[in-house]
Image (cartoon, rainbow, N blue to C red; front, side, top):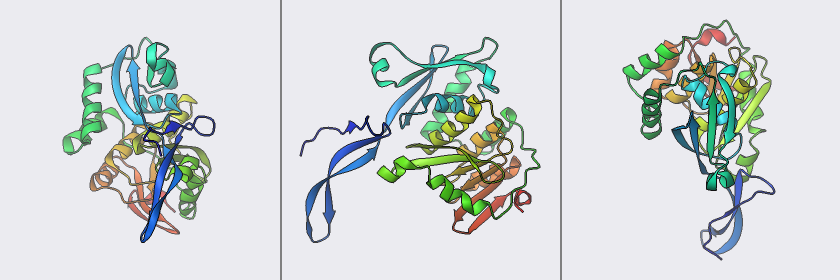
Length: 280
């Protein structure tokens, strides 16, 4: 068996790579086999020629990822703020599609120092503490929504999301996020090695399409963190549901910002940690 790195499985799925492995079972000799891995590569996002973020992501839907990222960082507010998004066409970057240029409308302000400082903090250790929550509230308004969802719809969401996790079925190594309307209809679903990237891609798809998310439900395949709640607030999403547990700061954030937060959504049961009035 060779020691070469796995080649990207381009013909079948650019989100997965085929690799030779050894399968082991207690008491039996190991045997050679093949498996699929979730592809992970860096993506550098540039705005007006400035590098503002590098994220490890699963290639695909890069334009949505960049748009969702800029939306949730408060750089853009409406679709017309973005003129164009394009992969770099120079040098090695053109071959690997790992650098993305975002062109903003002339009137859109870019506080580069504030943006890069915030991105570094969230990528290295996460944002935490009262000061961080207050700073986010200054950027994005508190949710003021009359949306109400039938409690019987909520348990159906994980399975609907699961049906759209094709790469997870192959690799077992991806997070997923999806948006649903109030009737439980799936609007968009995205996968990525990073749970925040999966959310950004999902929000970015709706943002680039000019769709409002103020009457939507955001569903994530893992836990609900502070960062995910922050992204949902930036998009104006009133209800967030997660298969796993929320963090204490996520619950605090949801209560401060008028969001409905659902966790441990499994089978026919779930917990509501904030905003129970929207679930009827």
